[in-house]
Length: 290
Image (cartoon, rainbow, N blue to C red):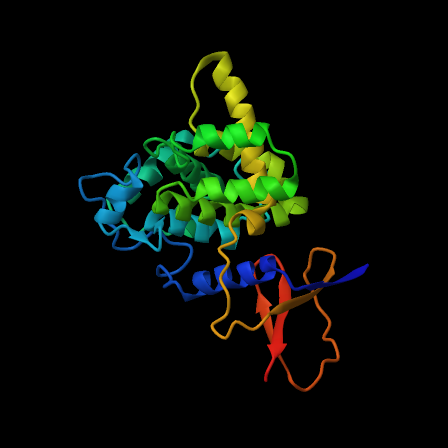
């Protein structure tokens, strides 16, 4: 059945702002290629701190170029892939791809790799980040907050505050990751990867925990936090951006199943309509043209 929703909330504005950022970023010579011209100075892209990569000029808008190239490939070619991120790539193929990227080669993922290989290498990149993407100064507070949460609204608000204590480049990459994972989750009927499944896979790659029984318990909590980050992306990563003219924006979307199809409404002549395709849904943004 056709569902018509009228959003005039911060989530619609947040998604539009994130979309603008993604659209404005320069493309890396085709989304199926590795980051052309990115040379691993000192011989390493993996296992290097985000701050060091930024100093080397290998980061764009808070996201390492090597990460952006892998995510763009997966977004374009793998959202429908059954078992995405759950099914691992061949170990030798993953290591070979890693070495080629480390050497600064221009790798065409579409021709010279496959979905499972790129997905596995992406997970390895996150897992090998020194100190983890969510570092040890913030992780205990996130766990404590999760254990003592009283309401969903309070959880998202508190989580947003705590995440802003991360180094800015860690926050940017975490936001980029969670946005992408929401897109994977939106196609879960095809890829069978729900937010919970994705959290089980990515929790250990994003959060580093201690070993032993205590570590197992801690990892379980971190996986639940990861699921919340995906499920509540707009609320948690809301950056409170407003339009320059500070006029209220609305989003109308009429969804038919998962196809994101819409029907145009009869609107007054002073309404400006802009159709926006945002990967996993299509919506109409409009505002009064005073």
